[in-house]
Length: 89
Image 1: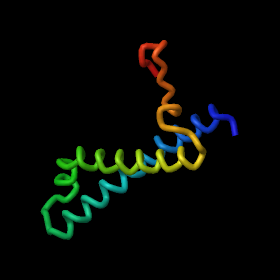
Image 2 (image 1 turned 45 degrees about the vertical axis):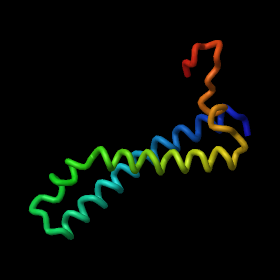
Image 3 (image 1 turned 30 degrees about the vertical axis):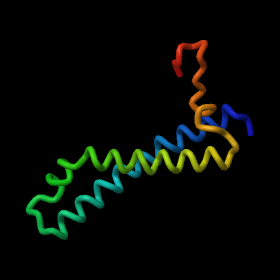
């Protein structure tokens, strides 16, 4: 498969999967606060949105690395940083 097609499909997959993970972690946090019998579990989960995003990003990054390794592409090749571009993507 062409490297640019792999790159495009992986980016789309990672973005979609990351959004799904945000939603999943929101439900996990809300469920936890419901079990703890917090009066407004959704409101309490909102206070923890940073951690939800961190967990989703870590899992997305791990899956992205795994998929790149499966395709035989290194991470720096994937983001395509070049010194001649001044490091711009």
